[in-house]
Image (cartoon, rainbow, N blue to C red):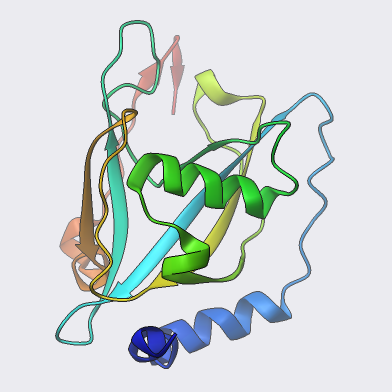
Length: 173
C-alpha cells in the first residue's frame, strides 16, 4: 500500500474521502424494477502529482446501444456479486484488468444517479471512488476498445465545459 501513499494523501482525494464519509446515501430501492449498475471512478497521481481519471471507450458490437461510448468502467450487478461494491470490483477487473482490491483501494461510494438517456430509464447507477498507484496499467478486456487516463486539470478548464441540446426520440434534452 505504500505505492498508494502519494494519491491517498493528495488534498483533493482527502477532501473527496471526507465528503463521502459524511454523506448518508439515499436508498437504492426507490424503483424496484430498476436494474442496478455500478461504475468506478478510478484516480491515480501522475508523475507531477496531478490526478488522473481512468476512462474507457467501449468496443463496438452490432445491436449494442452502448457501442463506442466513452464511459467509466462498470456495468450491471450480477447475481454472483455479493454487493454493489463487489460488482464494481468485478466489472473493473473484467474491463480494464485492474484489480481494485490487489492494485488499489476503494475509498467510498457516491449517491446513486439515473442516466438521462432514454435507453437507460430504468437503470440506477452507483458510482464508487477508488485509487490506484501511478504505475498500475489498464489492459482493455473484450468489451473495451481502449482505456486511457484523463488529467483532472483538463476537465476543470472552463473551455472544456459546455451545453448542447439534442433531440432524442422527438424530445429535446
